[in-house]
Amino acid sequence: MSAHPYATVGCFEDKGDRAIDWITRFVSIDSCYRAAKEKGFHVFAAQRRSDCRGDSSAAKMFDKYGKSSVCTADGTGGAWANQVYIIKGKGKGENC
Image 1 (cartoon, helix red, strand yellow):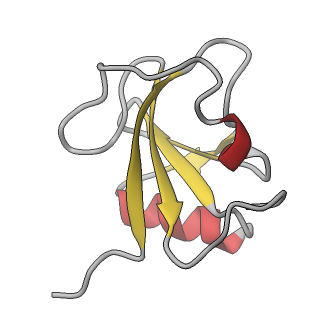
Image 2 (tube, rainbow, N blue to C red):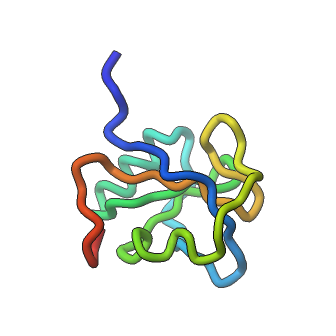
């Protein structure tokens, strides 16, 4: 079995003024990864077991509200909590 092309950064709080924009609904972390990669994003997040989030400033903004402890063990985030992932092999530049 091959390793995933992404790694978790951790669980981070979110608020109404979102830290990371919404991309789409997802059925798995892999499908969220594919949606983020297709848009050229290097950091993406899962929230509430269904929301896939990512944008060009996610690498700089994902920790805007600090860490959270409410993400689920399955890696799909939580209520007002982003489980953040970085796509392996990508830098942390302006658009990453």
